Length: 193
Image 1: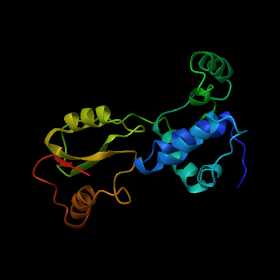
Image 2: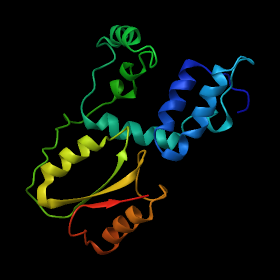
Image 3: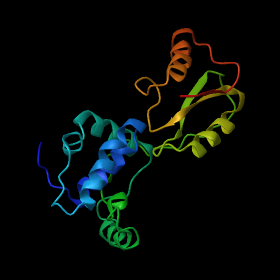
């Protein structure tokens, strides 16, 4: 989609997507640099101009909307968006705006899962050090709550989604071995780049 003008929504989506992997940093950096130039109105480069693929959007909504019950459509979204826009102009209310989750139907109330150290010792976690979607601090709390039930592989990278396609052979190997054999590392493992 060549020539798509840069808008606030386009910039926010480009920045959010850029945080998903270290390799995705360069296009938004070029975009910001071009926006600072005096030569005219910047346009989104082709790799940032397209919409989120349907399967990515559907998977994200299935996970997010099924996590907990969301406030319904008449629960004051407009007021929260206005307040958020004033407080955080860069995101312009997007994080608190209405989403498909407001219209999601539930057969029964979702119940939060209690994470404990009781149960089988068959959990392997893989986590990047700089994941904006699931930060390391939360993963460390989860790891502590699971106790000896779990092992965690940390990967010296940024971004989200650390298994396969992230460029870290060590992390991929540990997870693949676990999936094929069911054997976890004897202790938590850190994989360098």
